[in-house]
Image (tube, rainbow, N blue to C red; front, side, top):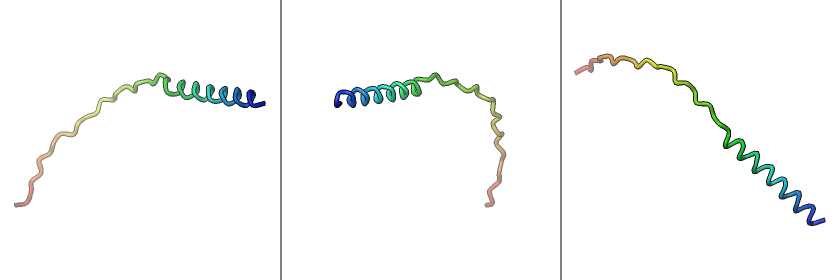
Length: 48
């Protein structure tokens, strides 16, 4: 009985490990950068 429990535990750990690595190694698509307009600097006067 103990061998069955140990084999089941090892199987569960192996399945979880594979699922984790598949999620981590999944190829992520790089989002295309959108052109952003930089705001032009505006002159501000400071009171003297």
